[in-house]
Length: 273
Figure 1 (tube, rainbow, N blue to C red):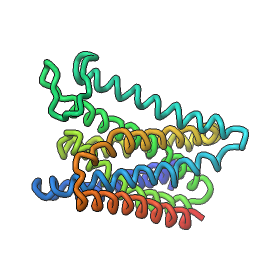
Figure 2 (cartoon, helix red, strand yellow; figure 1 turned 135 degrees about the horizontal axis):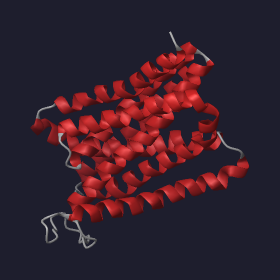
Figure 3 (cartoon, rainbow, N blue to C red; figure 1 turned 180 degrees about the vertical axis):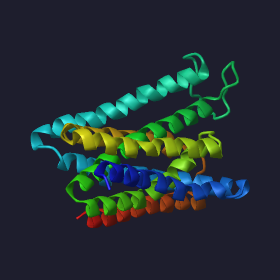
């Protein structure tokens, strides 16, 4: 079979399979889903931070010379600041005017009936789609690189990508649902973002050397988006409940998200070797 066709098939498997596996979450009855959702947000925080600090950033630094370390760190910083500005623009657009203020009350509304908390949640959903698309694009480049090295290596790499993406996609669904997306829209946008894997694979097939030089910076930007979402948008929402039981559950689920992503990343690394 043509190598390009194989890359398209297995990048689709690597991206879409993980989304469909995570979509089982959407099949839960609404009352159970509403119970599970806050726990999913805690899990997502751990998963996002682990993906950024355990996977994306180390891989980015491994791919560059020491002379580029400062530029790469600057890319992470610029990404975080850029996503702050982007979120501001999304909130302003959602409120129609640049006059929505945070008053610490999630029920605070502007004159058009929009709450600041709702606007912030919607922007978090938009950022998670953007960040996931960038991450999937990089995954597609990595899968294509493996196929160009050896077809068997490409196949197991695509399956490894699908495996370590599943827990992150579960977190993404939780974030999108909390952001006000319907189940059908959450599924649609996650599948759309997963197509970034196919795009990355196809572009890498035709111009791998050029993309290889830019890859560390794609990794850094994807990491900065996940860090920003976890720290700026999701962690503050956990402080709304301060009782001991809930706090311990949040800590345990964040740790579970970190542990699972790190475990999956280790398995994927072993398979790629």
